[in-house]
Length: 249
Image 1 (cartoon, rainbow, N blue to C red):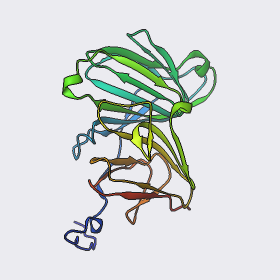
Image 2 (image 1 turned 45 degrees about the horizontal axis):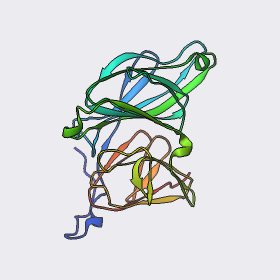
Image 3 (image 1 turned 90 degrees about the vertical axis):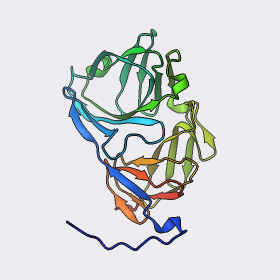
Image 4 (image 1 turned 135 degrees about the horizontal axis):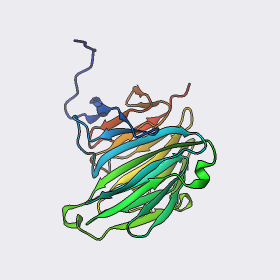
């Protein structure tokens, strides 16, 4: 048993409590040369807001002639949001969609009453040694919309709002935040952002959304006086504004 000294919270002072409620790490699974780390759902937490699954894809480096081969499989009642940092994936589905997603763009697929899709590497991608890395989040649909007709929407990187605030760069993947609205909107109010902080940079985040979490893809982040490392998923206390800080080397 271990013990660390910690001051008692001050009644009525939310800032005297730790900002981070729970820290989760991905559980890695090999899908045949391509690892996926599942963060949500976990024993400690099933969902954060409407986000019911949270997967880290890769990073993986494929030799020439190799690539991703996720065969056709069904989805129902959920939406999947695919966002890449490196590489590309070709999406095909039972609606007749064929779409290549590249870093910074969004593939939003709402399964609704049912859809079948595959995710593969294209022939041009397989011709060279390539790296693939990204996130796939799954969003629960409100109960009265679970059986809506399925749809697919692709949004190019250039269509997403970009915010640059003194070393803090934000791409608004979905929902609303910092006075901007992403064209990837949803049936409920959400915030999904790709944040890059230069050494020493800070980014304030308000308390608009009740349930919030941050996932550190790479580097370190300081939050509430604590430093957290990459591949940590930080579930935050509700009702508190906070500031993300890159402490630098």
